[in-house]
Length: 337
Image (tube, rainbow, N blue to C red; front, side, top):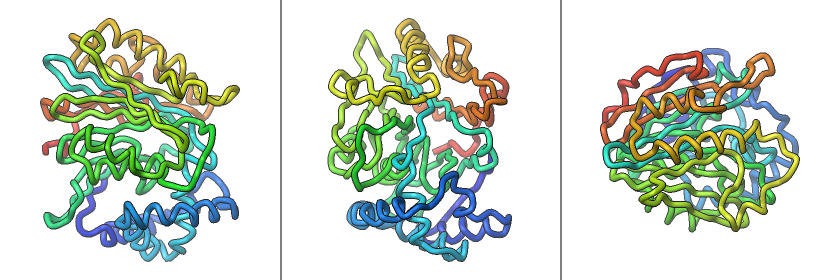
């Protein structure tokens, strides 16, 4: 996993990232795991007004990347804006727990082993005058984010879902990044989710340092939120809708990398243990010690590429840079907001 720190404006950070990759002989448009067909370019063009209205800074960053990569910004937009929607990727598991002693956040990132070299942990530091929160994140999707924690103490994790329908808007990775940059609390992220145009289908697991947690399930045609209760102080999500109103929107016969099995592992363990669990128990769950969660056969081209476990109340974050059943969790020293 690459570890990179970016500082400055969005354009400056984009140029830094683009040129840094170019110096290593890595060109984003050559690393996209799908062809940039006309369908993607047309879809991205229809998505552009949403980013212009709600997240213009990301367009500045893409311009910077294009300059650093000596490539077309429009081609980058076609690739980035269509990710998670055309077609989606259905994997990953995430949970949050808020009990009397701990505010826990955990996520496994499951993906193709061929993309292990693209795994990045990035620290974004914005100027004080910026209206963006600095944040730390993990991703295989370049400037889109899959999990992260910002300076305000908000953590967000993504699990994509095969969409029953799509429409132009912001996709999963961009929505998560927007939450990290613009929101300080779970409540703020939920309020924004009701306003932003959504292109793809996904669950977002949210937690903040005050102890608020929530599970957001959403796609172009609907949004539902699940909250913890005193008896069930946790939320969790994989790659299927589980709220009653959206469950019928799950697309049948889709390979979700055993999403229901992973969800049941989290649900079963957390139902028994969430009220007393700590960071060590979160790591055990992510490592598959309480049921199937990461036990893929990498020879099939599938694996858990990294795993993150955090205690937001204590300011601790640990990461396994590889499958957590085979790689140890180590503390991230940058997580010291």
